[in-house]
Length: 440
Image (cartoon, rainbow, N blue to C red):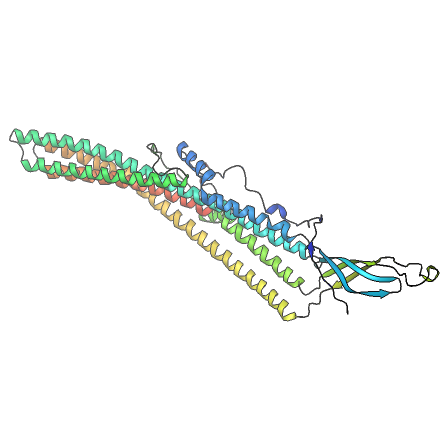
């Protein structure tokens, strides 16, 4: 009886990678940051800093680089196998006894399998690249929203301080009128109460500013407590909103849609790869047998090839007989393709909803801002001036004066709130489209 011992060792061989069509789709992350709309130089600096340091962007970039490393793995041949056989009981042959046998085997997948596996890996890497770009767009939108909210708080603080100065002036007037017997102490107490409310509001706004600054610093990977300078007010741009053109632009530019299309292409290739499993794989082996040679007869009777080592070559094929398994693999890949197509439809519907929602919001806010600029603000200022004149002549009381002042304050706060909401909606529309908007 002959017993054998097999030892399988990985052998390092230089094997050329399969050239995968479309490999350029799996791009390296670009050196230049994506373009975006921002008039304020401070905002552009904040966004660039966030793009450079934000952890979620770095994580998305790392996932893309990891996906790129799948391509050389799946397009390479399996490791060859070295086998060593030691005969525990020698076998005598015409040319001598067989001793050790060394074999080298290499498996070759069926024609086209490695190429298809490479295409799948390339498409997946291209999808992660688009998701990396989408994460950049998400961070840009979040930085812009935090910046605009911080600008609103700065404007609200400025308005509140102006109101504080105005109420302090009213308090002096009320005290003067009370001291001269022309007014009541109630007027002094009323103005002092309103002044206390303003001081309280300033404290709340100061706390809100600390929170918003911390949010913006976190997006830039700065310490949350790091101070940020006040933000100067910039007028919002006037944009033309053509929904059909915006839908088309979003369909071309939105990164999530591009990633979904890459995954659809991957699923299409996966069906082709699953069909390849019906075909056999090839195994090629070569062996070397050490022959000890014969010495049991005279030299005249030895065969001419006595002791000559034997070399063998063998070719084998896998037998894919379990057809149900392979049919299930094709069906699985086909259902995956259906799922990816539905996912693309859902993403497109969500994109169109976001575009339409923000476009309607922008139109509404633009009309409201026009109403504030042309009607409400002039009326509120005129009403306060008229009330102040009447109060100084004693025709109206302090309650009327404070009502006019509160109305103007409400209008000014409303105007700034609409202004901020307009800029945030414009940023959300840019995010929904996936590219800079407005262009300039």
